[in-house]
Length: 238
Image 1 (tube, rainbow, N blue to C red):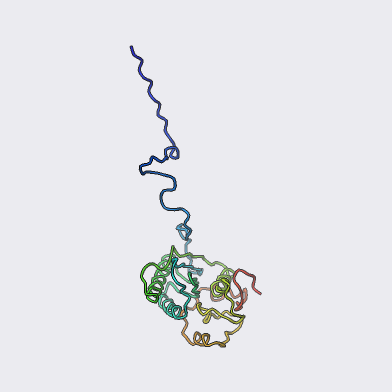
Image 2: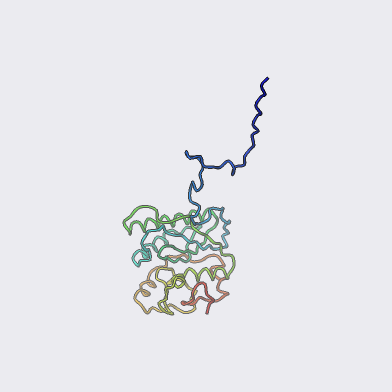
């Protein structure tokens, strides 16, 4: 009588052991979306407190020309002014070549989300109209950081208002950034000198930003001293 062939034992493979290229589609090393892309985390955002201002940063898509253009910035200021809501307000801003900074107040997460989205929509339409283009203007999600202490608020105000100096632009001790809300900021150590036509022009315009309502932005940060025109973010105040 012929001997029955011995049955082959089946061994359960781990997922990694089972993953091997078969040459006809399916899994293969390096397949799928690249994992090297850097951007804003999609983790759940920290809950917003109405008493804490937020530092919001939005970045433009690659390939756009600089939006730090005097005529375009003037139009973007109007967009910022029109985006205020009872539960969402822009208190300070700075428009750089490929990104923008905002200090905002929002009553809660929903107000911040809808407020920032509405602001971005207005700004994007303005940029596209000015450049005569269509398509996406802002990349990724916005980045938001909650400011919880007077010192954090002062550092954020200095960073936003003097961000051009942080990027290496320095036109003198009394220079203020015309692409920011510096002309309407009331926390400078000295009065703004109307010694240039563009300063006089800005000072004559109505403020595009809202007045602060939360204690940290109205009073708290001032405990650490007013801000000098020539303070460079990232360095100790002089």
